[in-house]
Every structure is written in C-alpha cells, then in structure tokens.
Amino acid sequence: MKPGRRSRHRYPLARTLAAASLLALALAMAGCGDNNGNGTTTVTTPATTAPTQRAAQTVDVDETDFALKLSETAFAPGTYTFNARNSGRTSHALAISGPGLTPTQTGGLAPGETEKITVTLREGEYELWCPVGNHRAMGMTTRIRVGAGTPPARTPDGGYPAPAP
Image (cartoon, rainbow, N blue to C red; front, side):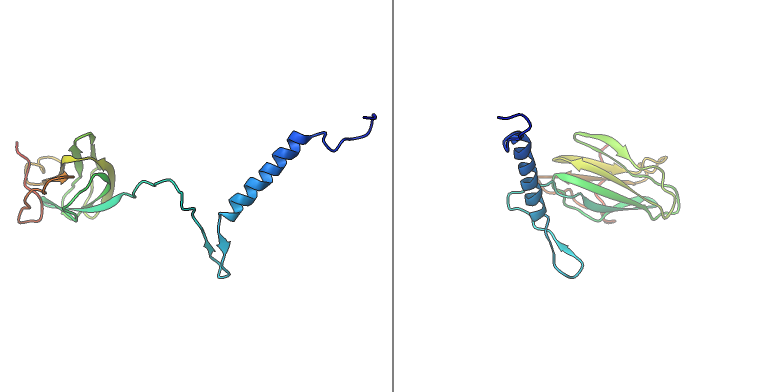
C-alpha cells in the first residue's frame, strides 16, 4: 500500500463495534414500546422475562386499648407489610417474631399514628404484640400461622389466642 493512502479496512474492529452498538441500540429501542398517539406509551415485554418476586401483601393491624385486630387471617410464605395503626387512646407499638425472623418492631405510636413493618415470613408460627409496658400481658398479642395447616381458632374480638406463657 502506498504511503498516505487509506485502506477501507484500516479500522475493521472499530467499525464492527460501532455496527454492533447501533444494532443493540435499535433492538433496545424497539423493545421499549410505541407512542400510541394519546400521550401515553405502550411498553411491550418479551415473553421470556425472568420471574419477578411477588410484591409485599399489606396487612392492616388495628391496635386498640388493649387488643390487636388483623385484616388477614390466612398467610402463605412471602413478604408482608404490616401497617400498624394506633386506634387507641394511649401509646402503642407493634412487634413481630417467629421462625427465621429477627424480632422487629415499630417505634412508639401516639393515638392516630401509623407505621409499617415489612418482613418476609416463612412457614411456621409468628407472634405479633405491643411491646409498650405491660400491654402484651393485657391482651395486645396474637399469633399467626404461615403455610400448611389450619390457622388457630380466632378469639371473639377477631384476634388469635394469646400465646402460651
């Protein structure tokens, strides 16, 4: 080749990478969806997407003076967000413990306040209670069963039986 003359094959790797980048960009944009003309974008998802984890299920926990009432009674293993609401006239909190779970609790809740605890429950029995003062001994406790088996019998106030001492 003569000096000063460029070959069209001088940078074959760079051209190959540039072409591959453009192809990847085109494919990515093609999968992003289309504007359907009304200001919204429709997103298409390939049929071979990886499985996603189920979103946390919310369970409302109504704390009164002196009982806990849960909005759910049946629990399968998975992630749950317990939404504690103090419906009483005194300070309360919510704690939970059970298999594979480090005891977790909310901060103190003044009347009318709410706070959430998100935990992953596996099969077994869990206890929820109010850790403030002697509230647990006064009946602010309940047990839930996660997974196989029948749930424990419910008490007249809608909770579960107090745990055995």
